[in-house]
Amino acid sequence: MKNPRKFAAGLLLAGIALLTASCGGIVNPQGWASPALDGSSAYYLQNKDHLAAITLPAEGNAPITWTFPDKNKPDQKDLSLKAIYATPVVDGDTVYGASYSGAVFAINKADGNLKWIRKDLSGGVVGGIAVSGDFLAVGTVDNHLYLLKKSDHTSAPGWPADGITLKDAVWAQPVIKGDSVYVATMGGDVFALDLANGQKKWTFHASGAIADLARLDDTRLFVPSLNKQVYIVNMADGKAPNGGFQASDWVWTRPAVKDGVVYFGDFSGSIYAVDITTGKGLWTYAGGNKVKAAPAIVQDIVVVADRKPLVHFIDARTGAAKEIKPLLDAGTVRADVIPSADGATAIISSTNGKLYRADPKALTVNPIPVGSGQ
Image 1 (cartoon, rainbow, N blue to C red):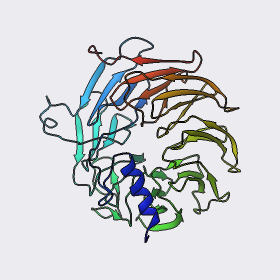
Image 2 (tube, rainbow, N blue to C red):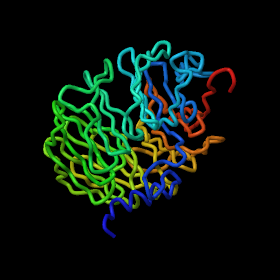
Image 3 (spheres, one colour):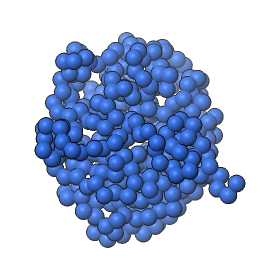
Image 4 (spheres, helix red, strand yellow):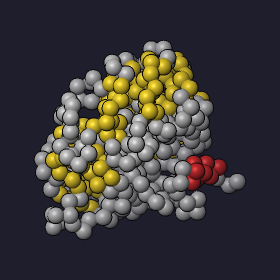
């Protein structure tokens, strides 16, 4: 086998009925964007290619403020996004998003009006976008990384108009910190690139595809891999001083982080608590079902939604299960679990567009009816 990393990546994606092994394109894009919260407002994936802005009440229905694309608006009526995997990003009065159709867009937060859209990206967007300062970064499955100006979607100074071409597909959301942008590829590489011109500063290499990436703090990255290992990588030099933490199966998720501990799951259904500084495992919880969604930590409870879907309430200190609740009529869960704005509950979004509120204090999970029709 000439390229075991690419084979592993293709095997995973084919196994979950997302990709063809030959071309790496998504056959039937479904979308799984996580909700973005902004005070009492939430921006979530109503169905695979539509976002909705809602108001999240303490109880009762969540009224819809706007949807995007809106077929009643002339500049949106013919807009086809195929599917949305990228979690919306709220920045000031704007909601930024990207789609598998190869589009990146900016929406007015108040009314859902389109500020701008760029539809010529080379390849679809799966991982998401990073927004920082005047720029946003987005990677595509067609091996491209773009750095764009938030104001008008044109390329950032020093960057080519058609983006930077990498050796492999980008499935992970990029990270922008300081004067660098960090990007991971399905070839097993993480690159630190100069924000000013896209030049490489360093490369970290793993033996398996890297389908997700997250910033842990001001100095370290969380780098999960399909080689069943997770690396804590220094942002300054690309080194992983503790080597890799060995999981039981592929890790394709972002983590939850609190008090120097990182929490994440794998495709065996195991949930891990790992000390960020030492790289040592503190506990392992055997859930039994695949975990794609990042957990949330609420009231010292790790809230995990698996693919069955079941919601696990786990003691963050000990790894002991407090309660397990099924999600009824939910499809499955691939989107990250999000702590609510008040920090008292967690919000869960399912693949069929339903929302749920998990309460670690009461150990309950209840649906959030959206609009008057639910």
